[in-house]
Amino acid sequence: MSYDKFDFETRAVRSGQVRTAEGEHSEPIFPTSSYVFGSAAEAAARFSGDQPGNIYSRFTNPTVRTFEERLASLEGGDRCVATSSGMAAILATCAGLLQAGDHIVSSRSIFGTTTVLFSTYLARFGIETTFVSLENPADWEAAMRPATRLLFLETPSNPLTALADIQVLSALAHDNDALLVVDNCFCTPALQLPLALGADIVIHSATKYLDGQGRCIGGAVVGDAERVGKDVYGFLRTAGPSMSPFNAWVFLKGLETLALRMKAHSDSALQLAQWLEQQPAVARVYHPGLASHPQHALATRQQSGPGGIVSFDLKGGQRDAWSLIDATQVFSITANLGDAKSTITHPASTTHGRLTPEQRAEAGISDGLVRLAVGLESLTDLQQDLERGLAALRS
Ligand SMILES: Cc1ncc(COP(=O)(O)O)c(C=O)c1O
Image (cartoon, rainbow, N blue to C red; front, side, top):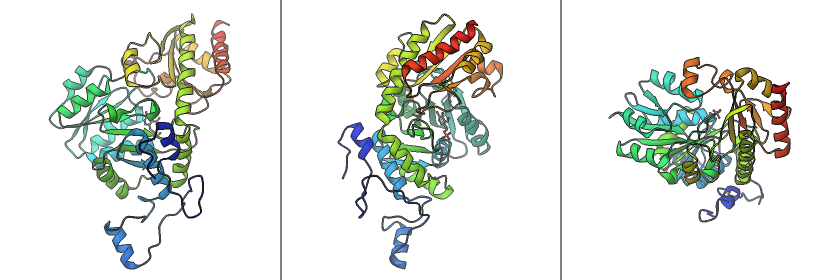
């Protein structure tokens, strides 16, 4: 049965499931590498594509397919291709859609490893990338070339929660015969639907909020039947960065609670951000839900919630940032995000530590910046933990 006409929360729980003859309530895991055919003729028909059905789990697995159909439904795409990681999703998109001589225009404020993929590895295959400022459409426009095939961004950005207007950049992409690709990892479809705003392809690191409990690595590409269903899928089938059936099952369980979790992450993050704004040791707080956020109006229009990331600058620089981080007891000192467990990070010495001080300054990453990925613990306990951190700066 199709749940396409049902609400988000229902599709998140129900879409894509096909019960076997056993009548299981939860989705089954199919840990099999290959499938048995009834005859040589049937095997030939499956391989030629004349007969639909499973062949080999590098590119056909029922548990993975259930995850793909559920996420495609939530993002509003025709097709989803699941991958072994978020980075594999970005690689499969570029390898499936681009060729030597093509040009990418990408936001500068993206996950560092994506920057390395574009500037080092894709460059080796003749695909050049120009990096521009996320928030400034004029920068994007100035970077366009006749060879530009793809525009790439994350919104909100990590760690400063800057936004891009997806509608404006999708119009720019389409006027120039290019595709807009949005990494929707921070918002997830529970808070933002890039395809409905004109994007062509959505990328996910399922590792983050889609899992929601920090258990598995995985990724996904969502879009139309031609580009994702044929071109990206064709690369996946050939090169094999596929999602394992066990991981697909974990992500299916994650999707069931996605809307509830994203609301809880957003609510707690906003309250902590508002409280942090009142603290004398804090110079500035970054969170799209704050009225003081320079793009608060865009966030309210484009997202149905502000998300779980809060960053803040401490007046006392790195010494204070490290002291605060070390004094917390509930927040985990780790770079991951999207987990039920809250995490705390010092971007300048970890996620952005490979940048030069000048590059960090240009990106707005100060030595006093602390990033929180607010989890699902009690808000009171999280606030008290940050109070403990701030008290350490006064002692
Ligand atoms: C926004 C974003 N995109 C992609 C990735 C890569 O995902 P993965 O670690 O699953 O390969 C990450 C990882 O942190 C990320 O934060």
